[in-house]
Length: 454
Image (cartoon, rainbow, N blue to C red):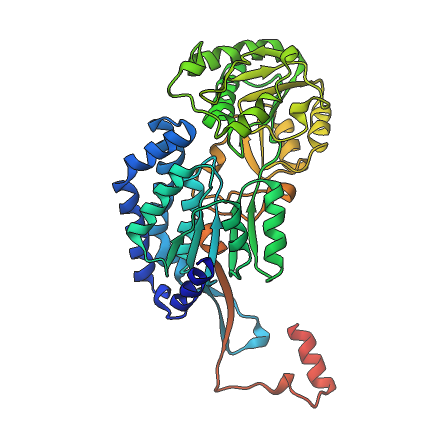
């Protein structure tokens, strides 16, 4: 079945139907209308899968997708135009330009933590660039996956955009097919497998992965504002966010004051009994619930620590006096646990960060410009914020992606369009004039002229 879907899409792509501006624009508009029409159903699915409130579902998933769609619809014609470039004098008389063409049939594999946004956002880029696409939503978020299938089924024929549901068996079958591009969001371990499978067909890949993203707070930071913004970024989606602050590195002299503010902000946001808060989400499944609970050292809990296996909820938890040898520092947490480590110099903080693979994100709270410049210029990471968390990915004007073990490739806005396009470099030469300088037989005169041009 999967092999047949890919064959039908390749057959449809070869008709050239997806090449026109009108076809792509109509497809984007259809997708936008279908999402708006099914907004309630999508929200209900996100609530069932992850316990997300309606507000969080719109703010972090549906609203961001609609923003990306509106941006693509508004700029598509400009993106599709040929890019004129300067022509070297040695190629006179001619014109040079770049043509963007679709790659063909692409695969989008999305994760369970933001199951709607991370399936549809890259798809917008694939559609804008004129590709056919197979979308493979996350099996763990089964309700949202069904909603995605319904929404895309209302808009498109399977020969153009198709949704494949299922788990490992379907993932394996898809990776055996030859695609023209694979876009994967998920864990490092699965990302390695995707890259390995893709390499057999020389298929290019974008990997959006994760890692231990640090949050650094120095003594010059506005501690109260920093605490509020950190609480938002860390406990959004119950910490199940690839760019969530994974651990806190705080200057020792302000730790106690900061933690006082941090605890107060958590209570203000989620209440004194967060496990009873309907707007506070849940862990995706029992497997991940038990894994996260296993990272909590009860002797180091200074706030929170409660959990409920029946509801799969874990309270926002702060672990103090953490060392690099603790279990919570051995893997990406991906849950509502905030380990706290201290430093006495910026060099000490950057040294801790350098012990891990390059993170997907980094957050620095500081008003010291020298410190800010040091982090920006010497610490490698995918992207991040100064004096805030997470919001760097909520824009169509900048690319979002990782580096090293946190992934490679960047998308959002025009970058999504370019990611799923091939740039053909073209020189259009005049047939009227043909300078003989490049042709044999060569001479000292030709050699001299060539040296002047090149």
